[in-house]
Image (cartoon, rainbow, N blue to C red):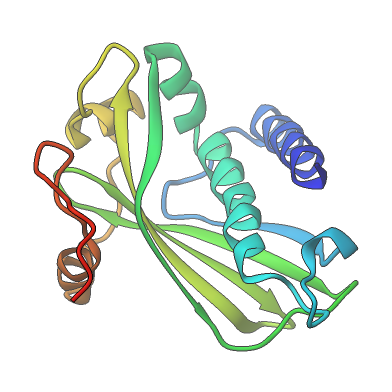
Length: 186
């Protein structure tokens, strides 16, 4: 339940910042400060590996709102879904430890937007996650990237994707929903 409260607080804070300061550039690094709570830890008394993705969602909400993309999506009946994500852990976050979730849009291809999230303590990366998100229409269908950026006033200032990203997508992807995907163990 605490992630619900954190989500609401993050959304409210981001909306206030958007109203006061206007939209931030799409290349901005979003930062939100958090603390590891008792409901975040596992039996080993450090942040549960599954909790990172939920807390990185907060960074995604913050950045989507403050770039103006959230409102553009809501007005047009669009929404984003995570298609692929990979997280790498370097150090543990302990109970009550303060950390910052840093989030940045990495780039896009013709079907998806890529975002990096980091858990950072004192300038040091403890964990990092890359997310591939697709944008869909509530009425059905995938949203083309040119239409997405046109909604932001044509602000497609994201850099080209690093060379390793397409290989990561190919290696981590499952078959399309239109193809069979049987669970067969070798």
